[in-house]
Image (cartoon, rainbow, N blue to C red; front, top):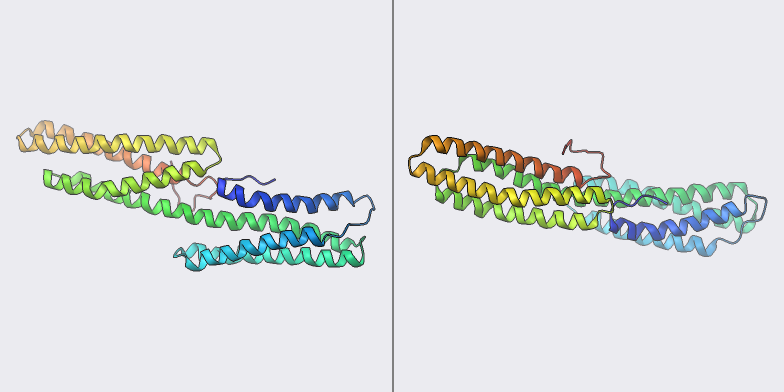
Length: 260
């Protein structure tokens, strides 16, 4: 059975895997010289599942603005559909010749192709979902640099007003990802990073406020030390946000070159 990275992938892929496993078991039982049984019904069941999956996938790809998804999805569709044809052909040949070695090869190739192709299709979709999270994370990363130039209470109010929606949206998406991940270690790391970001965001705003008030009172030496604290908090926040990117993508090949 394949490894499922998220609960959505598990819920969709596991039934397909079970159906394919049934075909493989039937093949193995006939390896000792026995005739293959009629596979029309199990092949039809797999074909229907594949057809529905491809239909939903095509609708998703056509409505998506993710160009990588649009580029990679058709490759997965082709693999799954070709494998489904192998199963149909195997079933038809076995009806005429239950001992056909050609049909048995098509059966195994088709079954494996459907399983790997379906998995690739679902992972392609999942990577697109992760890229949505990364986009929000990078928006927050870019805006955090503004903290280094806030020098008045008015600027602080504007900074908080602009930062809060991004932090809130990022936290919401990451919390959703935590619930989806089946790998507990990655889920725990995301949870740890999220907790750190929430705490440091509050600390950062407090530090900037203290800095602004100190400057207004003329305490330049103290303000310089407080400014150093702000820089450190910004760096810690950047590191925590980047860890979102890393631990949100356990199955991706770090295409974006991110590190925790």
